[in-house]
Length: 552
Ligand SMILES: Nc1ncnc2c1ncn2[C@@H]1O[C@H](COP(=O)(O)OP(=O)(O)OP(=O)(O)O)[C@@H](O)[C@H]1O
Image 1: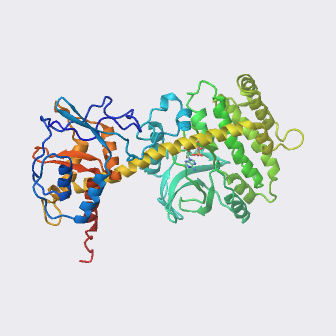
Image 2: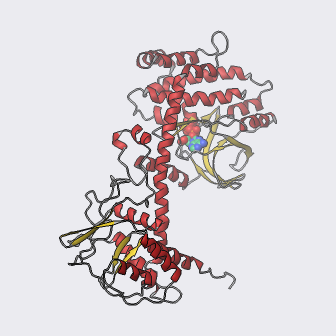
């Protein structure tokens, strides 16, 4: 037959041929078997609509049997679309006819990355693809699997207060003495709320009893503090569900979060100091969260690398964890409340020490015997600005008037704008990546519809349903999509062809393609617009069937 499906050469320059397409060197799509000249044969096993005949006539490629009486309105619509078909060029080469459109039709919703986004990611990553980046995908999948993980052994009840499906976030067998928080043993669980179905992190403090109402007042203050770099405290309750008197603090659950300690200080794998740009990213987030807490007249107490969570790798996000616990416990057990200004000075000292440890990526850097040497290292390997901030924080509470986080923020100065710019670029990039997956979702729905129609064993008692009428056409289209072969008979697999064809189908463009049965007894020229009508109508037919009434 030797006739090529229309518009099959690589004209889809938006996006160009995908880097990870299955076929790196695209060749023209061939029919399943090549024959000498374009011919059109009879209708084969199905009866086709008159529309398809009108297409054949239009292209002067033979005639079909008279069609069955068909939907006049649909025919009209389709014929109109044919009239507006883009101009086509036709080239014969070695017995094969190639058709080209002169214009790039607006059928594809794919757009390139915005220029500023593509350029800011550098040349190596600027190759356009149909799908979002592998790194991002991996990160998101890791977070999802973290949410789906189910523990064999929970080490506790399956339900506590209004939370169920408890899953421990640390090994159950771990020595409880290693899990000390403010002098109490603590255990973390991911749990699902029965009220809203969302995941939360339950932090249980073993063997603690709250004795006065003062703690509730303090909890109310903490509940109101919201910041993008703070893990929000949502609820607090006492329970005997664990077999003792425990207090449970309920925080937002951050999928895939790890502690700053495990990322930068543990494992002995960090031989070198942290890149300064990353350290500034951390400082800006840290200082902003501390400012929100101090402005509310509270103090964090928890500026420790094990109580700060990190998510993401490209532009890591930092979250202050366990906020409020110490404050609430202290308020409950002392008669005279602690002055928050004093504690806020301690928070600043905590920031100074934290920065030294994280900058050197060493758990021993802040030990008293190493601290002087660590500071010297910081001075010689990092900028004076950074050194200045660390010194300012470390001297808090020890000299002159109280130091303040607002002063730290003013020292950070222009670096805040740099971080803001990075965050905006990251946001633009994520939007560009998301828009690719948006397209994939659209195509997935189309494929799902196609899959429910083709090869259906029977419909309404008719075993031939999938093999006749519009369904037969869709079956041929399915072969056109997925089962192309080279002249040698070898599979011709090209993701670009599949994506391009599906996009045209989804938009119902007036462009024509040639479909034929596997035995080549049926050959049809049909437009994507026709195919779209076929798939829409057939799918509506399938979904219109009512579910059986469960009462009967
Ligand atoms: N809100 C949260 N969302 C998601 N994961 C969390 C949350 N809070 C803690 N985790 C995870 O739970 C685990 C235990 O947290 P925890 O604060 O006890 O850290 P830790 O390193 O075990 O500290 P410590 O040494 O004091 O016990 C960590 O892996 C942490 O990433």
